[in-house]
Length: 234
Image 1: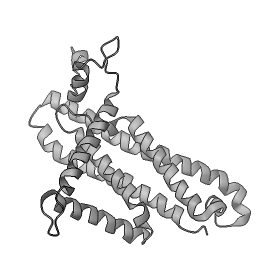
Image 2: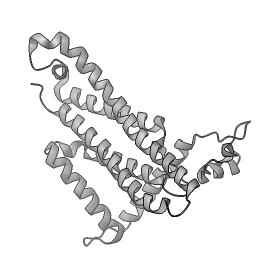
Image 3: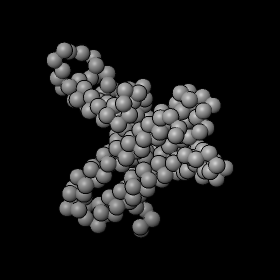
Image 4: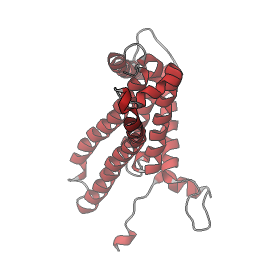
């Protein structure tokens, strides 16, 4: 009987209803991809609504996004300096997207794309490539000195350690986010089975806080990696 208990994902069921299924009746599009597209569609709609009637005295969604984006930008500039404005659009997009994906798993019939390792690994690889790109763009061939350590004679030892450390950042970013959100989904499902109302409603507030924290951690670490790429090697 326990094997019959499984979540119903509304977007996935909608895709099945229009016939996008394989020979076994499974959706042709992975669940995490479907909900990732759903999150992107919602964010695009909200952005259009917030900017449809720009006013000098912001109200409603425009006011919310101006305050929210402004606070994020100030945080990045305070930590990275004025150079932070160059990468702020990407960092803000990561934070808003990850937060929206995390929260999506709290809605009945919804799923968090970040509870799938493919989603988090893709973002971690992007962050890795992005900050390496900025390092090479700003420093050229001298960027390799970031991997050589502070003392020249230690370079043969430090170089492989630094390379491994940089690649390990992708593993850390992806597994931290995936593990926390996946664990949250499992706990929420178990609580819903054992005590559908009394246990899940209070936990929603705790999980909401955890979703914000996990999105901010990914955002902050990405910012710190970019800050390191922007700085001159010592």
